Image (cartoon, rainbow, N blue to C red; front, top):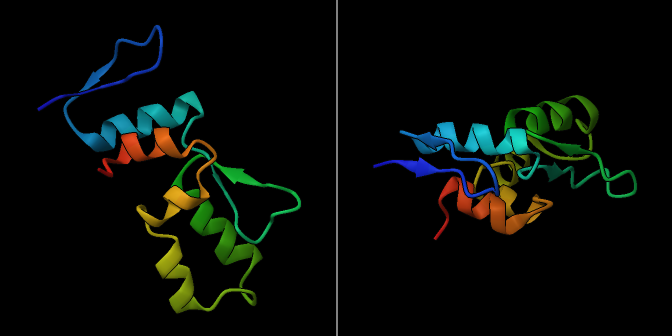
Length: 93
């Protein structure tokens, strides 16, 4: 099975969805907004960056058990700036 980038002018093909997801994030279309920084709309390109930001900046706002729940890959669809591209990249039906 192969995974193709769908952006105009990009003809990259990958053997895993993870490779595709990393590639598409470089296009800038998988950015996610921090749910605690609504006024500033701070966005992160990778899930790991969003998790780090929440852990460092919002320790007292979000309990550890809640943080792990809503910062899962599939839940971040709701935090994505371009949810349809995010859904397509991570493989949500």
